Length: 145
Image (cartoon, rainbow, N blue to C red; front, side, top):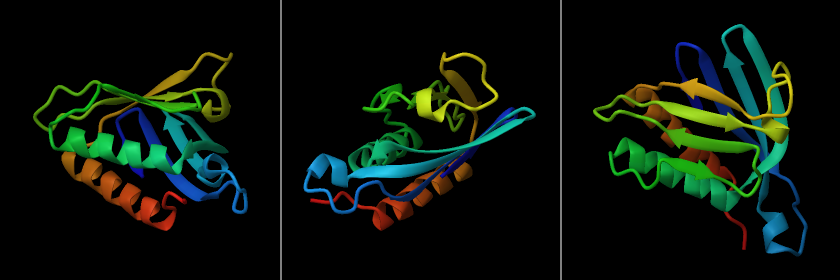
């Protein structure tokens, strides 16, 4: 999934399940995620188990609702506090997000331990493309029973 804006780029790619043979439902559904971020002249790639399969489903539903102009909630957070999304869109196809990057997702050029909020402003076409990409990734890494 890729979202861009004049100052930043955010890419999220699922690499694999973290635990392939765990007897625990929770453990079997953690995903290893690659995050590629750019903010102005700074770039970073982080890889960590920061999302679960059901959280990926939740992100997909949240983004679909925004694209359909039926926002479920302005904020989306997950069990791991490393990643979060905030919709600050004005409507009418004007999409604006602040993506929270903290702990394991914090860019290496960010000083201190406070989260960094990456602004992205995708257009309708790019948002639809990001949704389709999330659908493909979820198809490759579905919730495991």
